Length: 348
Length: 263
Ligand SMILES: Nc1ncnc2c1ncn2[C@@H]1O[C@H](COP(=O)(O)OP(=O)(O)OP(=O)(O)O)[C@@H](O)[C@H]1O
Ligand SMILES: [Mg+2]
Image (cartoon, rainbow over all chains, first blue to last red; front, side):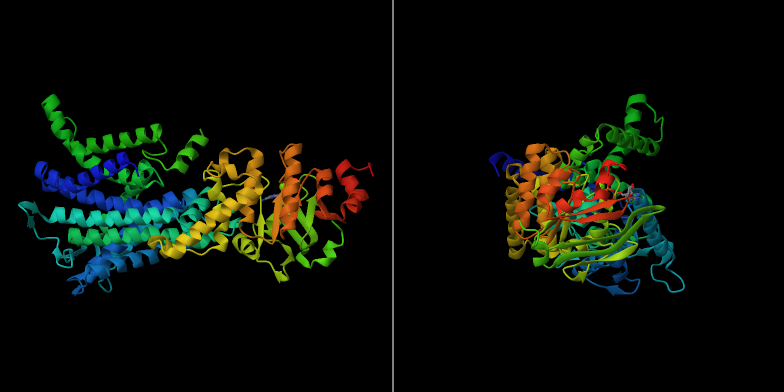
């Protein structure tokens, strides 16, 4: 590593560490919360990236794994069954359970590709949500549409994240504690993704993505490798689900709609499928941008002295236009993976 | 190179009565082929004769409607390409099918997959065993690139190689799976005379290093010089089998190639 890139790395690290404090001081709690959610989305997008970016399998039901992780945490750490299991048990459990669901989803879709695969996975996502919605009778498991509330707040050993700490005169409230917990999770997820990508397995995924028939003819067990991709991607979803449940203190089926799946897919595609930096950028942009666009109301008032268009409508419009423009001007994503960039330029 | 090598080496591949239909089209009918260890066998025939279809049946891409295939004395898995490759048959494709956005080296490294073991845990924890294996994969892949004569291109993107080099790369990738039988579908297509000679040398070298070869080719003279045995297909049926001299003198073969009346 040369001096320049070391400098950039250190700069980035300081920025990431100082960001929540600066945001808290300048913009308030609400914006730090938005950053927390951005990190959660980064985690989800990195997971989906394994399935879509590495193995080339289009998955429109990814939010199902997020839901599985969230309910796993919610049911085992809340008054619902009066169970209060700790984080270090529930996160791995959620990841494992999500992986099982990944295999469950993967198995019937193995022969499918592209649009067909997207439709089946979309259905799977909806099935999970509808199950969660209806598993309140005859035996009440999920509490139906009301969801599960009073979920135990997150704590890692002696670190209780809902407490406000004071370190050398600096206030560290819940939202900043959460920021750092999620940051650790994202760091691990990035590391994991990098190692998978550069491994024998990652290479096999890339080969399947490029030419499945040739890959199989070279002795790659495409069935197992695809299931592995689904399972690995799902674990990220399961972990972020658990973190989400603990942070929110409340989960309900409403949080796990198709729209969420589409949003996560947009993050991966817009950022640059298969490239970790791109996926992170995509997730941060798409989770922060819609919030920032709420300011459009104030802007109108400033410019025209009056709010002409309801900002909540306008912001979705602007968001949509931004996405369409993006896909027209840079279809390979903001920071595309090397291989993807070539794919796009080849076909032009 | 004596013709009796076939009887000396045991039968490596034994296909009996293979049949394959596509709807009303009889792409293969009652095709049998025996191939000995250490031999180069040619599969020739006019366009649409069923040569590629035979390869696809052999390598598990199609399931045959009839017939059996034995490899090293045991039945070959049916309809499971990866299992066939594991058993020791590797192939190249008539329309080159490289992983064209990956590097040349990575393509060959993928070929090593089937003979290596590192899994997810090894990758995630970067264990010593995994690192060692990864280094070995890269080293043997480089060795194979050198073997086929494109070592200098290792870091290039596979899709950007010249046509001839792409064909060589496909061979290197196939050899990486340590096959006992290498099946080449028109490896010389699109090559000039010099490249063809080099390719023939490479094929002989692979054979001498212990891998039997089954190859499809349209250039009859080139095949005749290279092969120990030749099987001829026409309209999905085997019309001749034997040494190059026998086969090329066969009236049915002359008829198939030159049209009726020429015989
Ligand atoms: N998947 C398929 N579906 C339908 N028909 C097929 C299929 N594959 C091959 N065929 C037909 O089977 C016949 C044999 O084709 P095949 O590709 O095996 O010929 P070939 O001997 O390899 O010819 P060439 O020298 O042109 O490569 C052809 O008529 C072809 O159209
Ligand atoms: Mg053919």
